[in-house]
Image (cartoon, one colour):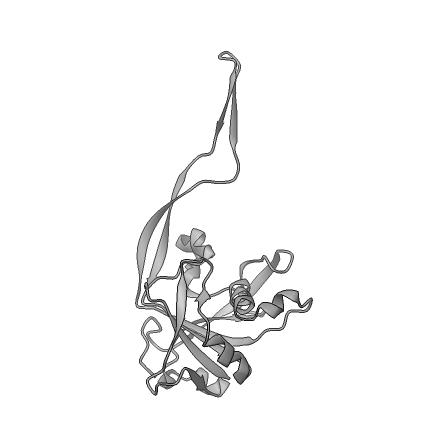
Length: 205
């Protein structure tokens, strides 16, 4: 595998799943559709392929802490109230407040199956779900932008790739993580794979 390290200069990542973070703590992982969206941003030719070809084979997400932020939202639905006595109709879109976590000092490792995929990736930025969430490639301690590594070594804590990773697929450990907007809203499943005793911190490699 060929690993590329991304980090956010503004220190935040805001996944769409943040709406239900109070119940699922879903900011700890990236769903299959988020990873697929990153791939299609990096490799736009995938948008024209009928059969999806995965080029990001593994990933790992770590951060220093979560900062709680409040956000005001409005649903698409409109409440309609008929005032018969007054002779008019009231249309209203109710507002609500949700609390979402904003990641501080996020680091995202993307592992590509081929070297040329990694070489294309290090020349681009990625947006994690929203355009303002820009992550840029960062060099490793050795000054290299691409880190070649065997998959077994990617899972060893002493190698420094600590963090959270959602392993995609369905087995006894899996739980539902959402519905894939790229594949007819089919359910997405995965199990949480954590590397390191304290995955919210990582050492420089």
